[in-house]
Image (tube, rainbow, N blue to C red; front, side, top):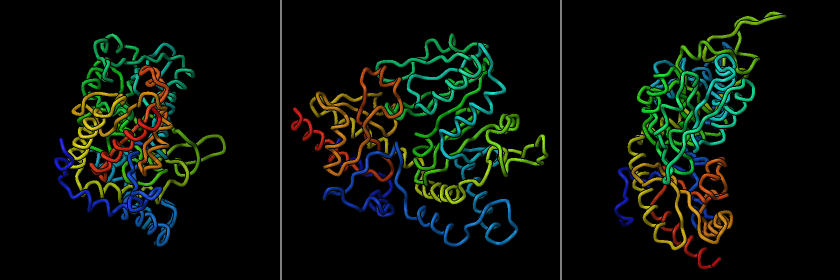
Length: 414
């Protein structure tokens, strides 16, 4: 496959002009940003939206009857509606704004877990989970005496489901899994697992941090009970994330944090709590960030998540083919048809941190380390990997630069 075969449906080069940060040079070379799995770049309309809020109608929401507060409240709740439409939620009341996907998982593990998980109950995770979808469940297990089980992986980083029915028992309360691995890129069969989990009465939480920004995601199609994702990975600002949950489940959960906005009546000895989603949005929320997330959703929707998905699938296929040509490179994860736009790799004889530092000198930004997946890296039998990840603004020439720079690093270090 040649680079010319990778021309996307949309004009990606014109689209890149919408991202001011991509116009700069690093060490005298054009920036090739290949770390979008960690955090994506932001288009002008998102930056301008955030600036407009703080310049023109900065005020708290739900608390004032004056014009600025009413405008802020309208924009904040309109953003909630955009999130609901994006993921196919049946009601905006099922959408809770959080700081990030990590806080969303913690909210469920604490608020739902505190009343539904007891000693001897089981929680099923997978070996490829981000720490954000492991540690909160470990903390819940330590508080309650529950037991954690893990779905294993095959040699290409795909879930092994042979023992799924044995792992799913009448004591399984929750199955929490990533939709797409942030290291392997593996796309997991969430619907299949969810159907079988529900058959034994377990709930399903899906970590959509690596899928919602990159492909059409519908909570009904997944048959999920909870879905979490972060704004900063989908062209939105940092400090804003989303928890979607089935309304009946959210309505039965106690608050996660106490304070203003999440109450109905406060007395000296006790309080009554607000309806969802306000019950889980204590204090002043990230108002500007939520509104800017709405602008990011508009931006992605104008391009089309299906278009973005096709573009990225071509990119990762091209990247796998090109990297395979570099002597000493080992790539981790399944074939291109079974993964998202992420490629983790090692270079024989060179530490991933040294690879990332060398690439930075070439103007190519990649991530190195364990990527918040230490159990997965122990399973891979490596302490760290380098990771290149792509998004709607990535062009094939940047993958070519990545490969050429890795080849230079190989010659230099060896």
